Image (tube, rainbow, N blue to C red):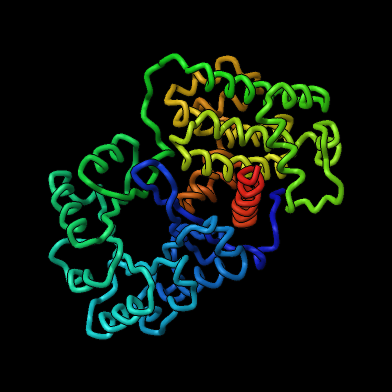
Length: 414
């Protein structure tokens, strides 16, 4: 029997990150489908756009969905003319004009007005020489489909927009190799699979500091880790001890008396919570600030995979948190995943899933990745293969976003 939630409570909003030249997430585009089991948006465009606004703001929370970063939201002609974009805070909203919007005097006037009010506008799937050229004086971002646009044109387009003080954004960036070529052509921002389909990396020795973080992450991944073992791991890392105590004594927990020992912190929060914190700090340490987008994405995946593991209640479902958390280790370390996992004591199904093996764990990871990319058909097909109803996915994903946002705030404060 399939497991599911009341579909009336489902919120079918996902997000796709937008990266800068350093690999930092600078914004998210919000994606919408009229129902969690939908494989395409069959609603009229204006209705879909309106529901993206309402679902994001009211149900999940715009700040949680975007981690306080700008949100790119598609607007159709009726939404542009009706002023729907002005319902969002101007500091968080980037109003994206879809490529199928007819550009006439009314649309131009509405865009001029939104620009004057301080809103950022973006053009989606821009084609040189199209009617969208008339909107360029009022837009801040222009998206170029690098799959549909010949590569020899990239540099000229990027230079043109840069001269106009418009940010050129390369979309449909499928791999890091394409991202590197677009970066060399002068694009400032990137959207697409990017970190989700990494290149094959050569094996190189890890610096001692990163090796220490990897060893810590390895130790934390052991099953049935006891309270005493977690305490020893934390206590033997001075910076980790400091962060744990600083985090638990922060205002977020409202503890009346100061907690001064790791043992007390473990008793108050539990092994699971401390392991999550320590894993996040270790993962961030491994990235050395080079792949912040990958770390942020891995956190959401970790919580989503954990939730799916809880629903499945299988013998290895407890390892699903690590499944999501480790899913981008090859990108973060720039080493093949098979080499990264050599010394890690992970359950065999989790290990197999991370190197591409076909099992339930891999299906869970793939559907989370599909959902975060707005590939609704693939996500729903994965849920079906696991015996889950598609209407669990919006709840799982929104919980992952909120959880990672809260965890990031706590760990950053420490």
